[in-house]
Amino acid sequence: SQKIEQNSEALNIQEGKTATLTCNYTNYSPAYLQWYRQDPGRGPVFLLLIRENEKEKRKERLKVTFDTTLKQSLFHITASQPADSATYLCALDMSSENNNDMRFGAGTRLTVKP
Amino acid sequence: DSGVTQTPKHLITATGQRVTLRCSPRSGDLSVYWYQQSLDQGLQFLIQYYNGEERAKGNILERFSAQQFPDLHSELNLSSLELGDSALYFCASSTLYNEQFFGPGTRLTVL
Image (cartoon, rainbow over all chains, first blue to last red; front, top):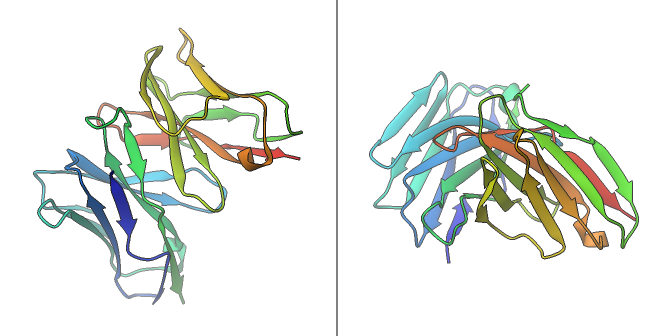
């Protein structure tokens, strides 16, 4: 069955550094992959979508890569700030498998220390 | 503000009871998704509706059911509630590419 793994439960970095979060998946080839930010007690907020034919996508200080051969996406936050502290979720489009439309990883909790 | 509304914000009830959670999608979005998020588990996809029709089903228990009405709002019905059903329940609506906009959630506590 499909498995989505985000590299670690928690990641602590110093302000100003680049945070790199990993999302690995198995047994499936999604047409696209998404990244979301979730703050405690609130709903996830969409950040970026990257399609299978795109290698990289950027939005302000955010960068996402998608390697369909490695079945991996990397999510980078450059010049990180304490306000970037949150849980980041990757999500895969599963619409062609088992009628299960979207599947989310467990998330990585990022803490940026001043 | 995502444009997705959910009511109620909090719900406290007893085991064995039945509750209804309500969601209104963003204007123009036809898809509504329901998710459950508990402390020890991530975001679990429950069910999706598209323009009134069930489109995809995830890990939804038989005690749970949902529907989407002609005005596109959706309701999630949870019955015979158990302690383990305590969780945050999110509704989301989506664009054509499944970019999802989440509501603020309903926190359900079963005592």
